Length: 208
Image (cartoon, rainbow, N blue to C red; front, top):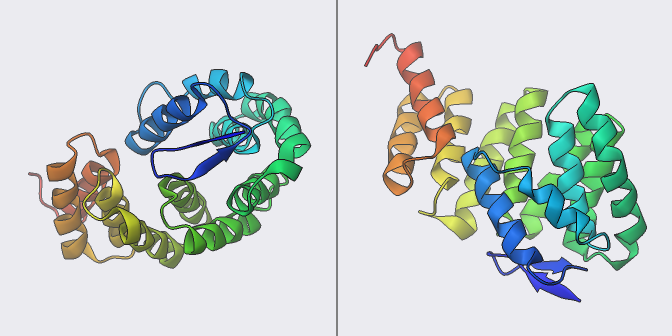
């Protein structure tokens, strides 16, 4: 049993409205929306879906507090129990989450890097890769992942904001501003695009 997400990628072990719930989470994650926690209900309703439970665990760990790690534990357990049913793409995402749970952030990034080379349509995995690249201070990886997002998603919401922020972190300020402005033309709620342009203006001493 599997559903497909908004990018046409399968979600193993998911049934009912799981794909719709996952797609909502993806939009909220990419836009820094207020309804991210809705994913937990989706994962709870699909204990045999390794990808959904891996994302739920990742989201708890990303809150970066002790409580988040405790709350991630049952989702990690479900992820591990369902791993034998996972597709290769899902296995790589689960490997990234497993490494993260062991505080091996470099291995988490490496797994996401491999996943997104093979499946560049997985925009959510690219975003998680950028999360780890940023936390590790790996600016080249941040930019590499940003450009990878455009392979399958050129001119789609949030993609050019991901590129803009990565360019700014790599000190390519003029191009970062261009990408950021392009991003908000596509989607005004692209938070990373606004953030990138603000960084550029601050760095250049431009108040407006």
